[in-house]
Amino acid sequence: MPVSKLGDLSRCAVHTQTNKPWTLAECIAGYKSIGVNAISVWRHVFEPMGAQEAGRMLRDAGMNVPALVRGGFFPAKDKLARQAAIDINRVCIDEAREIGAEMAVLVVGAVAGQALEDGRKQVAEGIAEILDHAQAANVKLAIEPLHPMYAADKSCINRMAEARAVCELLPHPMLGIAVDIYHVWWDPDLQAEIAWAGKNGKLFGFHVCDWRADTRHLLTDRGLMGDGCIDLRTIRGWVEDAGFKGYNEVEVFSEQYWAMDQREYLQLIRRAYLEHV
Ligand code: ZN
Image 1 (cartoon, protein in one colour):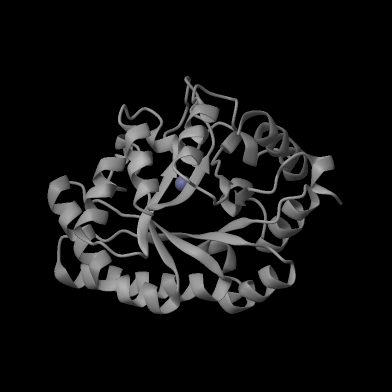
Image 2: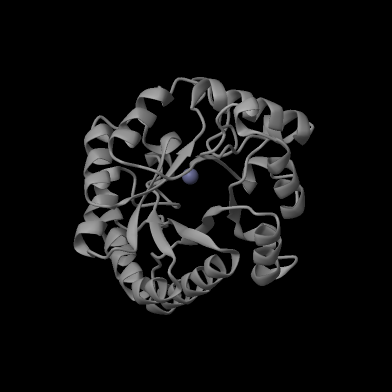
């Protein structure tokens, strides 16, 4: 079916977690049915069949895979636990290679009660340990800054600037940043940071959804594009001005939408993408 009839979905990717009730096979079939040929894959959806088989399914279906989601969670109070995290990240990189993902997204982690600054040092130490492995596997590593509401236990990197600091400390072509608008839309430095990332080859990923002004849950109430208050077109403009040529990845965690018939929901996703991204 010609893409023009469906509108321009040529740069649209969808995260499997957006359609959490679905299996990987259902996600692939569903996305293809609306003319989307790119999928970012969350690790748990290929647990039943393993990364190799998942990679075969994705290749057979002709799907492009911008990202495996997710590695990271480097900080821990003791050295053994930090080493265990590094080992898990090596496995993530291997899986990303097997499913044909361009990058592994890193949600970097945080330990409640530990200084964020110490957490960020541990993140840099952890990433430094896996860069060679990422290079050998030809899998990029994308640090995703998370909204400060997750600073206690999910991410000690909350703004683009902190992600940039790690990129500057560890200058490596395989290390960059995933910009998720849900997390960084409010940052007064966002435009400048996106421009820096583009100029320095660090703009790896772009995740879209929306921020509901009356948000009901900090994790599972993301809006579909157009549901909230993010000026998505302006931010996409900054990203494109910075030279980004990758996918606009639809990543929505929402109890409300997960409760819907997922085929009907896909039509809403398609419309929201065409109207607002
Ligand atoms: Zn994201």
